[in-house]
Structure formats: structure tokens, C-alpha cells
Image (tube, rainbow, N blue to C red):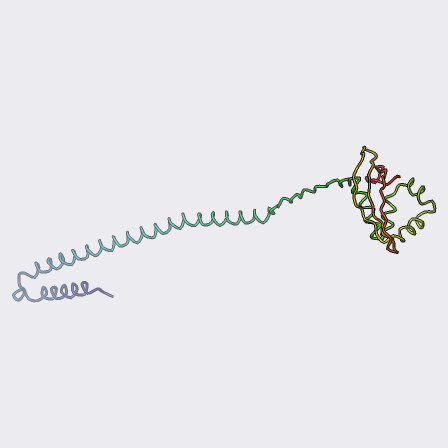
Amino acid sequence: MLSAHTSTFLRELYMTKNRQHQPAESSPPQDKNTVQVLLAKYGLIGTTVAAVLGLLGIAITAYFNYLSARTQIEYPVQITQTAEAKSTLAAQIATPTIVPPTLTAIITQEPQLVEPDQFIKDYYTAINSRQYGLSWSMLSPNFENEHNPTGFNDYKGFWDTVEKVEVQQAFVLERKPASATVFVSLTYTSRGGTVSNSEITFGLVFDAANDTWLINR
């Protein structure tokens, strides 16, 4: 479609040419000058329009070049960042997190050897609790044979006649690496209610195999 300026220019040019083809006596002398003026007028407008369109084209071209250059810069960066992220994720998956085991220190304490006087107290505690098997094991074979020649039943039969034994005092008279001497003051209460006191000096020997004392005499 022709622009408004172009249509006006063609219409005026057509009218001018028609006037030129009329008889000479009716053609004004200024028609030739009028055509030149019109040509100059619309030629200047065309030049201006062409210049504007040229500038617009340059601007559009520059804009698209800018977009193209920006895409070329940003896209590789995005690809690189994405590749790095995938590489990091893959490394995290491929490399398991190793948690070092916690070492718990196990402190083994050697059993404390019971003092000789406390050993005698523990012996009579076992008798009062009727744990005759335990109290019998606290005697040395020598003591068992000397004081209970018929064996464990004789030992158990004697203590069944006693209601309880109270240790009034116990203290160490002598102690050596393999033996000890303990003085003990006792109060016996029989099953019939009879109460009697006794003082005994015990000789203990150390049983290295079981790491304990034994009543030897």
C-alpha cells in the first residue's frame, strides 16, 4: 500500500503533467518550476525516510548481535555450572561418608583383695544367711579335715544348731604376702536361746589360684 506522501506526490505529478500537455497558450510558464519544486520536496522526504529506516535497521541489527553475543557467553557458563553441580553431586554419591568408629575405653579393674579381717566378717555373714556352701568354700582343705573329719554334712549339722553369730570385733594381728593372723571376738546365740561369747585367733593362708584368703586354722 502506498504511503500518504507517495500518493500525494503522484497525484500532484499527474496533474502537473496534464497541465503540460494542454495548449501552450493555456500553460502557465511556472509549470516546469512547479515540477522541480515537487521533486525536490518529495525527494528530501524520501531521503529522510531512507535515513531513518537505515538507522532503525542498524539499531535492530546491533540489538540482535548483542543478544547473540550474550547468549554465547551465558549459555556456556550455565552449562559449565550445571556440569560442575552434577560432578559434585556424583562425587558425593560415589564417595560414602565414613564415620570413624568411637572407641570406648574398657577399663578392667583387678578385683580388690579383701582384707583379712573383712574376710572373717564375710565368713560369718554367709553362715548367718545359711549359705553353707559358700562358707565351706572359704575353708582350706587342712581346716576342713581337722575340724570336720566327716565332711560337709558334719559342718552343716553343727551350724544348724546356732541361731546367729555376731562379730563383735576383728582386727589383723599379722599379715604377710601369703598368710595373715586375725583376732576375732564372737557372740553365739543358739537355737534354744543360749548366748555365749568366744575369742578366736584365726590363721589365714592366701590362695593364689583363686586370689582369695582361706581359713587354715
